[in-house]
Image 1 (cartoon, rainbow, N blue to C red):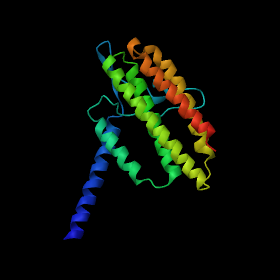
Image 2 (cartoon, helix red, strand yellow):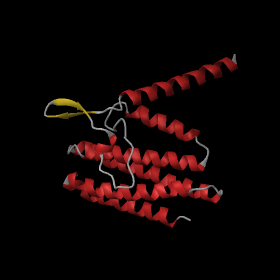
Image 3 (cartoon, helix red, strand yellow):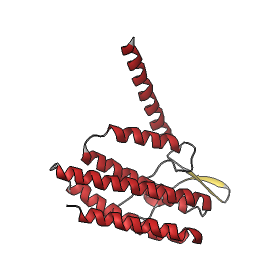
Amino acid sequence: MIQMDMKYKLFIIVLCMVFVLSVTTVYSAQETETNGEMTLSPSPAMTITPTPDYLLPYPGILPDSPLYGFKTLRDKIVSIMIGDPLKKAEFDLLQADKRIGAALQLLKTGNKEKQLVALSTISKGQNYYEEAIEKLAEARKQGTGVTIIDTNMKRAGATHIYLLQQAKKSVAKQLHPEMDQLIQRSISLRNRVKETK
């Protein structure tokens, strides 16, 4: 009986994860409104102007979507399941990139409420980036080869700074001080990656 309950719970968890993954896939083609007409967003490479050596991934569902909670729940579940520090650093970097990308899309709207959500999303992305730094250091201590992820984190950090500086131009003036703090935090985090040995 107890074993049946465990199988049932595991089945429900797997079913929920499949549902969340499929919802993310179905809704990843975000729609934007231009002059009253609905059109599909351009491809990921066109939505964000990255620095030449590092491209942000397509963010998928944006934080202003009612489905965003499912996406964050899925990410937390996946994060818990990763034990290897190097894999965790890679996952955290991906999450940081997606959140920065999502925030940039919200900042472009010019809507102050969405921009406030974007600033919070940038901070969450930076939290993931900071966790990736810690996991990178842990992997390095274990003697794991970290050259590729280390290079990617440096490039990502530079890209985050560049894109946030560019995005500041579209942010409401009263939000500039908070945006400046986020840019400064990105600079500080990238310096931590450069100093980690």
